[in-house]
Amino acid sequence: MPELISGAAFGALFREFESSAWRWEAQGTYNQPDEVEPWQRWRDGVPVLDDLEWLRSWLDDIRAATEVGKVFQRVRMLTEPLTEYLRWQMEVTPANVDAGEEIRLLTQAAASRLALPEHDFWIFDRVRVAVLHYGPGGLIGAEIVTEPATVARYEQWRKIAWAEAVSYEDFVKT
Image 1 (tube, rainbow, N blue to C red):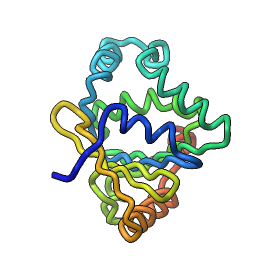
Image 2 (cartoon, helix red, strand yellow):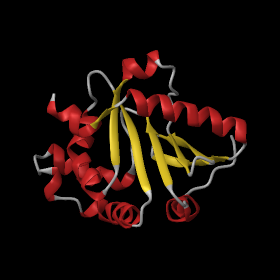
Image 3 (cartoon, rainbow, N blue to C red):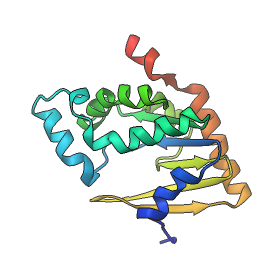
Image 4 (tube, one colour):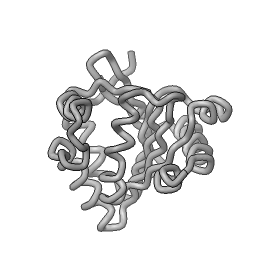
């Protein structure tokens, strides 16, 4: 297993980047401990956008970063059919978009056709990649990659995914 960072060291990546943070999100379900209760409330019929306190810190960080010109973007791969988790996330997404994050969506079939990876990652400033590693209890940590040829491969995946994905706003119109 490669060396992984987590906790404060992982969180620092989101405070220290200079211009852009980009995410490829390829899992149908994430078992993040901080999402268990809000996801259950959604299952119980509580409207998602009425109950975002669990996400407030993240939304505030996105808003603060984008207000000073930094870019947060992500492409979320959608399973076919959508998992229950992804149905919930689709209802959470407007809050991320309102905070300033650009979110695009790509079907699992398209991701497969485009040979995009099955693992999640963040690219920071197009020079550092955080390859995310998950276990049954959620995120274990991130492997940091800075080797130029490997970063270039991730950058190519970013370009392909971004070009092929549909904006959240356009997706929900259809």
